[in-house]
Image (cartoon, rainbow, N blue to C red; front, side, top):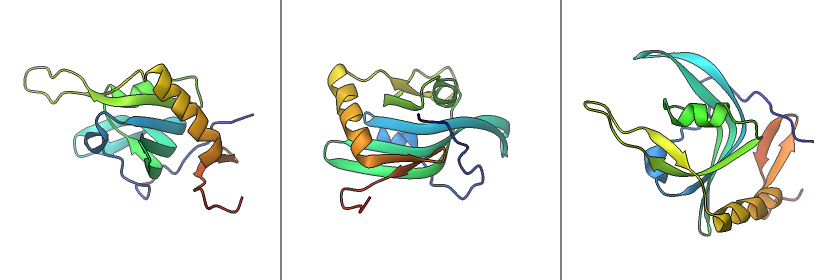
Length: 138
């Protein structure tokens, strides 16, 4: 049974930037939340053990990432699923504000692709999710 672990909550993890993955299928594996101090004040972020960006034959992996955003972060840390899958999107901006980053629902084809990719390339170990490249010996 998959358990949810607590990923690294220091700033030593990888930096996931939503803007760079707009329109791509993204998997957030092993998530929680924490409150941190930023230059703008205290904020609650999603803490994610593994982020996988699936773009055709290309995969980009981020480990121990903080996910920011007033719409994006809660959509991850409030989920009751171990893995959250969605298409990186941007909502509508309010006057004087930036448009929020969001996840939209993937199509059935995209969701099935994620479900097929996951067990072949991700290993859960002690509450952490680890990427297993094709050439991995385990």
